[in-house]
Length: 187
Figure 1 (tube, rainbow, N blue to C red):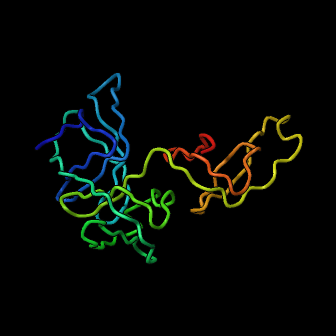
Figure 2 (figure 1 turned 120 degrees about the horizontal axis):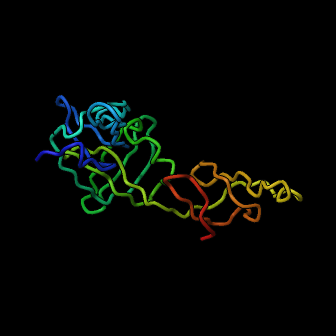
């Protein structure tokens, strides 16, 4: 099955020169003079490297078959994250370089969707919003709201630091947008 640059979507997988790439982001550009083109940022599945590529509008590529499986994240072995299929207890390892930034939102024993591209594990899909406990947050200082700085840094149980309102304290559970890293609400 073929996919045209006009049909690109974030997260789509395509094959270029025998290698499988994930479309991270793309932008259709129609200059005043000359033909239209598509600017893309692609991540190579096998090693996680990210490149910028430009294609002519309408250029076609082989669309790669993808599927996802619910698996449990067990632990980080240093160079790879280990996941287990809950149905048959089969364990797989995915290189942390391939997983990228998504792992900062996943705690051990959490269930995640593992993405398989042409039957090879290639990444995970985290929810757009997650609930996580605040491990460390400095107390809000009196007068901070006057300067318009109504946020303070807080470290979550996974080690990620996000900006939260001054009233959030250690031990509270909050909702965070995983795409932007922004505080959404108390859980």
